[in-house]
Length: 305
Image (cartoon, rainbow, N blue to C red; front, side, top):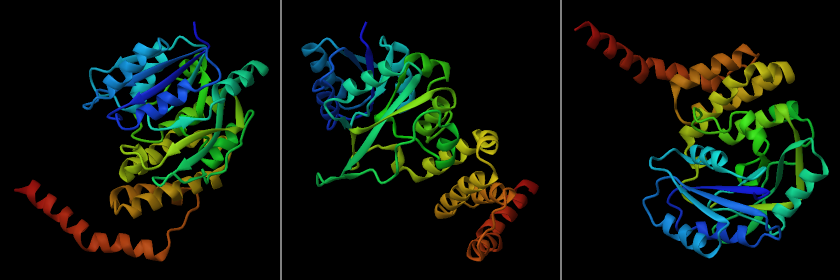
């Protein structure tokens, strides 16, 4: 059995998946299997992966008969993994050559560690590399800090013991976005977190089909995430942190002109002491006095006929 199972979800990534697969092949640690879960692609992604499987038996291709989404594909990979540890890599990202070696060394040096993550650099479509921009480095038993800051790391930089992933229920498929935050929260609540500051995950921000490019899904995922963890935030961090997160939810929905969700987010935000600026109050009022109120009257009239 391999020590580490690498799980790569992929959907229509024929143009970029070789970057991820070659990154795995260059690893200095060789006791791995790489499970690529093709999420019902309509391009030739599977054909490319099959060529790697023919060359190196450590590559494994699993094809979903129905599209499950990236996190459904990750769950499929976890279920089929044979390794004690599972490391995630997106099909358009890559790792530094010693990533797996450093991960396994840290796991073996501290048996209490259930999850490890690395530093991240971004590479734009001109090939220019720059730091992630969000502070990383939280480690240990750090659930309260992870909840307070609202993130730990993206999935391409995440590794965990397979047993731990199964114990926390794997990825939550009910969330439209922020599933990476959710899995990190669940792991941080139960297990010690390890951090590799000098091992890099390279994320290519010119890639297509990233969930983070869909603002509506991101906003709704963030909202659902904090509804899910509200009790824990209050217990471990307090009302000020909960207010901060609901304020961001409110700003996201206002930016999207989603009045219905803005109202819900404002109700939560104000519940924890938040105050809506005058300009946003005027925006909501304008909605009710114009389109929103007219639509309400039209629905009532239609129902009465």
